[in-house]
Every structure is written in structure tokens, then in C-alpha cells.
Image (tube, rainbow, N blue to C red):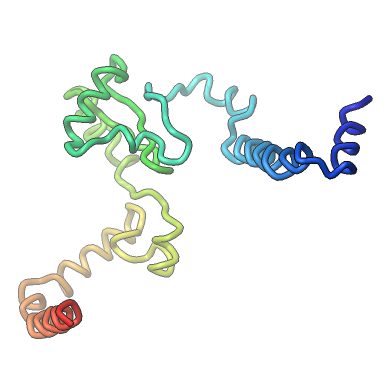
Length: 186
């Protein structure tokens, strides 16, 4: 009996095994295949990475990545992780949720990252939520590093966050704080 015929018989019998296969195993298999396809974890991705090997990384959990390894004192946790899993260069790659994060744990690595590669690492990660909230990456908080970001930062610091402007907003801030206190103390 072929595998397809066996599956047809299970479905026709309306057995609990068929229900388990169709409701649990099939969606899990489909999810696994789609994840492998969209993350590029196939053979072609392995061939692309052969020459460009990423820094070492500890084992990660599927959705949270390495976030579970960061404790109450992040600097201590990162030092301990770097001692166990960091490479000779003092670099390691952590995935905090969906964001890949390069950690430089030695003076030489930090100097290299901050001086040599500062332009390539200065930008912010793209965030779909940030783009929806701010109607695209056009504000100072979400814009990628570049000329547009520098111009927006200059405008904000000179026209919105100058000492005179901040002082002029004092009455509005105090009014908002009073309203928030009333809402909390109802």
C-alpha cells in the first residue's frame, strides 16, 4: 500500500490518527517548509555564506533568539556570553527577537567597529511598525542614517528642542501632567 493510499484510508475512516495528522503534523510541516524557504536556509544560502562566515553565536531559541540569555544586568550577561561563545576577534552575533545584533566584547573589536565601519553600522534597523506609526521612515527616530536624517536632526534640535522652545511648552506639559494625575487618581 502506498503512502498516499494509506493517508486516504485514514481520512476515509475518520480516525483520531488522521485527525492528528491533518490538524497537527501537516500545518507544522508546512510552517517548517515556509520558514526554511523565506529565511533562505537552503543550499543556495549556504553557498552564499561560505566565504562570508558570520561571527560566532550561542544556540538560540526560535522566536526570542538570544533574548533569554540577557539577565537583569545586561553588561554582565554579555561579558559571560562573550567569555563562553565569543571568537578570537572579540565579536559575536546575537539575535534579540528578530533583530541581529553584533556585540563587540574587546577593545580591538570595538575600535574596529566604531572607527573603521561606523558608516555601515550607524543606521537603524528597518521596522515595519515604526514605518506604519510614523508614515514611513521620514522622522528623526526612524529615518536611516544619511542626509535626510542629518537635516531632520538639525531642524528638530534648532526649532523644536531649543531651550527657548522647551521652556515655552512648560504650561502645556504641566496641564497634561495634571490631567494624567486626575485620570490615575479617579
